[in-house]
Image (cartoon, rainbow, N blue to C red):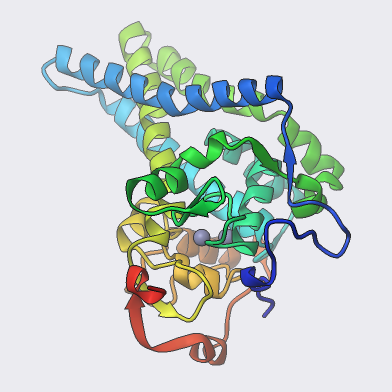
Amino acid sequence: MTLVPSPKALTSSDTDTSGVPVTISLPPARLRLIRGVVSGVVIGPFLGTVAALALAASSGGRVSAIALIAFAIAYCVTTLAVTIGFHRYFAHRSFKTGRTLQVMFVVLGSTALQGSLLYWVSTHRRHHRFSDTADDPHSPHFARKVPASGWRGFFHGHLGWMFAADMTNVMRFAPDIVRDPLIFRVQLQYGLWAALGLLLPLAIAGLVTRDPRTAVETFLWAGPVRLLLVHHASWAVGSLSHLYGRRPFDTDDHSANNLWVALLAFGEGLQNNHHAFPRAARHGFSWREPDLSGVVIAGLAKIRLIWDLNAPTSADLASRRRAQPQPAEKDRA
Ligand SMILES: [Zn+2]
Ligand SMILES: [Zn+2]
């Protein structure tokens, strides 16, 4: 199988063979706008969650069943659209599928409010290319291109990276998305899909219950509370799963299999497995490694909605496996 080139082969001033730079600098006005939007996306779900908890407290700690069901469905759909769609399909092409599912991945993945498909894929491919070096967009081992550790490194790897003054160059890392007219057009409507993801639960709950309080409660749980958990689970993949966990495979970075993150992010916390075999459709290689996305992928393949799944052979796994799995922190000390 094809592996992503070693991150150590490239440094900050490098360009690839076509001479396209790794990042582009943003004009001050655009940088201010992006930082404002990112601040809203980070703080908004937190404030909405406080409101949801206050509303529950005002009714003796009770939350309506429709709000909790909407939350569970929204959490699962949003997370799976990002893990299976944005990540394993678009960023790594780890299986094949038809146009209908591709468009659904873009629409539903946009409701995660983690940026457009183009932004997500280009940032993620850069993460693999430069994993845990100065040019990794979200390593907890570097902040603003200098080595970092402790809380500073964790904060940068978790969410501080989104405020960076330069942006990943999409023409270097995701030209395939730019050159796909249908997918490019659908992902351009990112704001519309994100807004629909927030407003649909409100509208459905309002129509079903005819009760404004339940409608608002459902909006808060399926919107801000869901986003708070989806965001921090996803961001923990970049922070905690590059800090803590086991490292069964030999990779040139700090990626680790963090089972807690894997449970919350539906398999994405198995970063060491993933960095060793980036194109594998399933990240869990044994029953001990929780990978709900991989289970859903297997189900979709069974009903022939997806096909040509990329999977490492047992010889591939054996060739990269360490004699002694090591914890992430001690590995490169
Ligand atoms: Zn990683
Ligand atoms: Zn990846």
